[in-house]
Length: 145
Image (cartoon, rainbow, N blue to C red; front, side):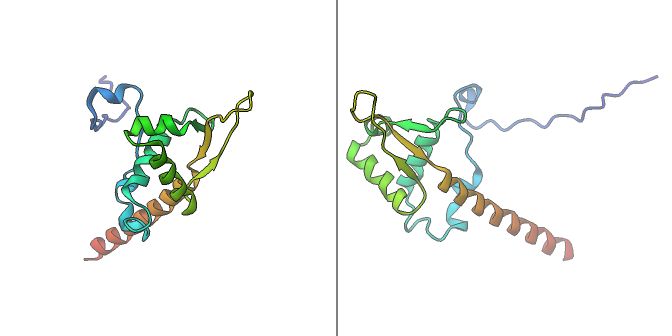
């Protein structure tokens, strides 16, 4: 009797960033890179600087805890001035794509800000739904021709 392995063969995984993918890695949806196709504000109101800031904030996410960071820490990580990163964040806030909650420490000093990127994630989810619809329409057209 010949036994066969019931598990299907695994497709090789795509490795983009080499050994960096083993740990401390942030997954980025492909829709993020194609946002201009699905969101009219991309390239006009939503600029590349905003996308870089969203990535920098997303990298600070841990579990279900809120994203917390000082302006200076974000700026240093991105290699820009504190005023620059603060301006970018408030631009995103004004576009309705980022929520910023100032915090104070137990000693009454300024604490890290709390950032919520959920509005931007919702925008990406909408863009992804549009992408999926376009793909389904394309498959329908290709199957009828």
